[in-house]
Length: 128
Image (tube, rainbow, N blue to C red; front, side, top):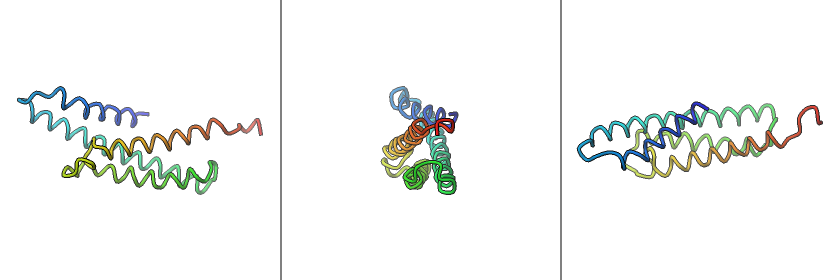
């Protein structure tokens, strides 16, 4: 939960900087943007680790349907690629806070929601 809160705060900073920064505070806005970029990149690295760990654990235990494992690996890879937005500033698509960051977050949250639905929908041990 903490990681998702940090990621959300970083995205809010990205959205607020262009509207709140005055032209005379350009250096401060750039510094704040760089900090938000690094923070969101670290969030995406952690997000990648969660997806990889769940997919790897499920491959061994087969607790969840196999499609969650199969989809977990590309979700982890996409999140890791998205974390490079902290160091890539030449491409607006890849740069932190750009479209790739939003795609990574959306794909991960969709996969994670699927995991949650599977957990809620499956019968408990007492029902089987």
